[in-house]
Amino acid sequence: MINLQFLLTALVVVVAPGTGVIYTLAVGLGRGRAASVFAALGCTLGIVPHLTAAALGLAALLHTSALLFQIVKFAGVAYLLYLAWQAMKSGGALALSREAGSEPGWRIALRGILINLLNPKLSLFFLALLPPFLSGNPATVTAEMSVLGAVFMALTFAVFALYGAFAAAARDLLLSSDRAMRWLSRSFAAIFVALAGRLAIERT
Image (cartoon, rainbow, N blue to C red; front, top):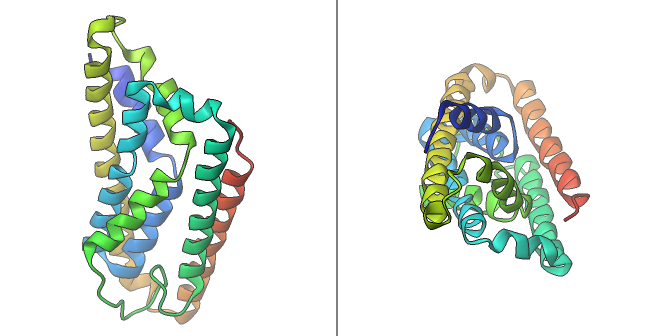
């Protein structure tokens, strides 16, 4: 069921920088390795509803309903702009500082969940990605998509955790400079704004 072609395809998709990667890097730089693991976990869990929708055929419904698509899309845009503000705001959840305040892991994970949950394109993405790797047996299609989705999620968590570990390792070096902190905060904010803009122009 799981072949090398699927693993390579999934790995390329996961490694490519996206909103989840940017969020995990920001958390790793701002709060350290442990926090970045929660960020990676949240981003991974955030794709579960989309995988489920694809497996059950509900993704097609989302993308044939213009109103539903627009509601989810603009909720996602608003949330990305909120993250940009949190990156720029002094003491914000994504602000970079030498003395990062403590924050419950579940809250860090929740932001990661919302990032992917509010991206309506993910369900269509999985609806396109998974079927080519199925056996073609209608009796096992749901089980096969579930297994492929689980593998994709495992890769997502592993790769994102590595990104977070890398960011946490660079934390002490980069945060020793006030100028570097300001530049990084502004850069993350700009990236989230750009991602919000890209999501805003997406169509069904």
